Image (cartoon, rainbow, N blue to C red):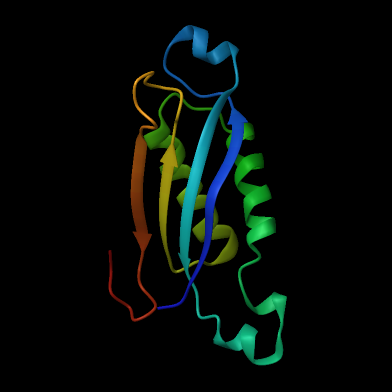
Length: 123
């Protein structure tokens, strides 16, 4: 399976359970791998036949800021559903991290896989 990926996409958004968290922006980091057949794009060097990681990165940040939630688990699920629907991505692995959540940890977060692989294997 081919994969298009975005690693270390860092942005600020409102997220958190506690009232004080709803008043500030916090840093989130996303690593994203998306299953995609890249052969047709490579054949004639056509961006329109692959996943545009710049456009997807922008869409993720806009989506997160337009849809504030309490939990990173919720945001991860919603981003995954949004991307699968908008870009017709058959499979993705999304790791969403909140590096400032625990002061003595480098980062904390969730990692999810959704969809089916290009070979049709359900996840």
